[in-house]
Image 1 (cartoon, rainbow, N blue to C red):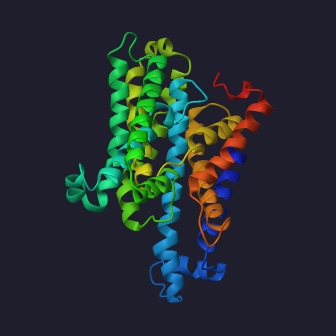
Image 2 (image 1 turned 120 degrees about the vertical axis):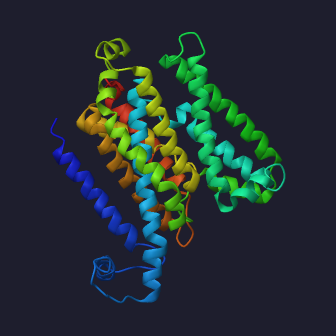
Image 3 (image 1 turned 135 degrees about the horizontal axis):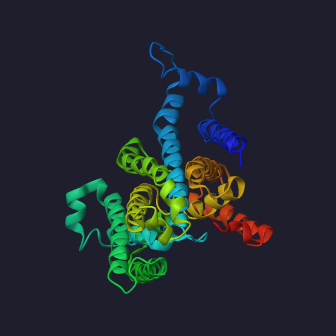
Length: 348
């Protein structure tokens, strides 16, 4: 299928989202002011803007927009890669426990930060929670893969999925215990964090998470040819000289990097990694060479639009962005299932 019209439409949708995200908010910014602010970045242009407009655009909306684009792209590209790896259209990063691991580690820091984990808080300061969430995602991914390698038939798709389900259930149970022990302040903090939000993102958060996410955004498209071969089965993959275990390890590592880094600064944001690859696959087909990068563009656009809605639906208050993505993603996914009767969601 010719992917050019779809690609251009998605790039236009993302560009429109970028303009809207910078202009809309509690402090409205006109298109003229937005244009002048953009021109300021060019060398030699000394354009003056009202101080409050400069602060809103440069210190609040710009880092929030960039973080939303990076997280949306990384979740969607990780989802496309995981679905290709498992040859299962219902797979997403949450299935292998990445999000659950990050949530458990963050909850432990929130609840036990003044007691058992006081030393961790003292050592890492403001980085304590992001590092914990990031480490939780990496740790769970490593445990799942370690279990799969040491069980009969290790490395098989079914083993990996079952290991992910078991770890997710265990992490959920431990999180339940910590939630039961939490005081009111810790419980409110975790509840808001577990629903995801870009409201508090700063340039410092962006500097912490962006390098890890960018590494994954570069790596996922490079794995696309191997994922195409893997769709034909592991035997075909090995016959062509491609080690499926190596591909699996790389997809796991880059998924953990992307999702863990995103969760560490914005909390848990669901459905992007599940719905976006389906939408793109139904539009252009299952070729990962186009599917993965276009999923990144659509994921970035979706999360930016969801953030815009989160800011205006109950203004001047703000909804957690995870609620918006679930409200959009859940009905849309059911629509796709009913419209195509499940047949078009297969990779084959």
